[in-house]
Amino acid sequence: MNKSALIGTVFGITAATAVAAIGGYSMLDDSASSATATQECYETQVEQPREAKDDHRIAGTVIGALVGGAVGNDVGDRDITTAAGAAVGAIAGNQAQKKLQESRTVTTTETRCGSAATR
Image 1 (cartoon, rainbow, N blue to C red):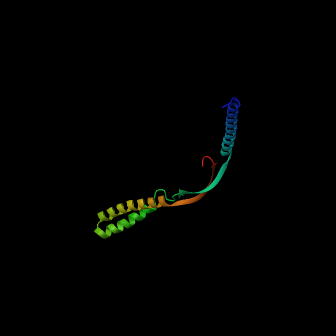
Image 2: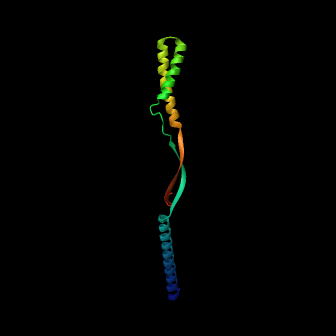
């Protein structure tokens, strides 16, 4: 291979590498700046627990005690069975109301914004 062909080949490879490096750097710079500057907003459905009107669950406790006492009185027809039925019914009514309150939710729509790169 002669000297001028070798110089031309080296010069051509060097020029092509430089152009590719500059082009790649400018594309990298553009994509980085557009990713941080872009912010997208979207709406999403969010479920939140409904606020309880009876925090101490008095209604469930009282109704459970009344029903439990009536059942205990029918079963044993003695004061002890009535009291035991009322106690068990009060506990059951309290827990039933607790589960009912925990299962009730409110669905709301929230608008959230964030950058396109983080989403």
